[in-house]
Image (tube, rainbow, N blue to C red; front, side):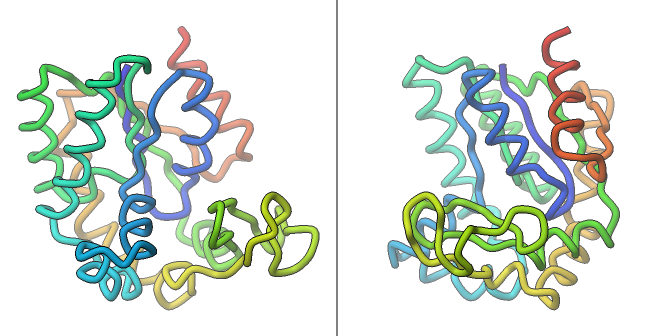
Length: 217
């Protein structure tokens, strides 16, 4: 089972992916996480994309596709999981076309795309209040899910900070990029892949239930 979670930044894709991956035995593949890991490791790739991530712009398709190719093929080679769950990919029509070519090569398909629709106001509130542990990557929210001690991770004791791409001015840029470059992907897949729209403004548990109802029926 291969699934794609689609929606604007802050629509809850990452949260839902974390919930669904264990239940469905899927590998959660997030380009954002892969790129941030590269930046943290100060790899050559990380040096190339660090300034791009901080500005809220998109990393070039060739770099992202190379990362995703390795991740998807690793799942196929491993064989112990039921499939993969893409979060934040594809982000451009070019990436979607590249993914089409990769899946044709490996003989796989996308079984369903879940579109999490969320309003701009809800997205800005969610992301600007989000805080992330620099060590274990646990995510908190200053309003809805704060750490017990401000700035300190409950899980590992690491430093909890606001990511550069969660600052209000960067969020606005990210949403503009989504509308101009990412939303057109829906037209690319229309009529080719099963697509299910979910209200991303609903409480987290309700969104999870809506997705599970589709997957398990």
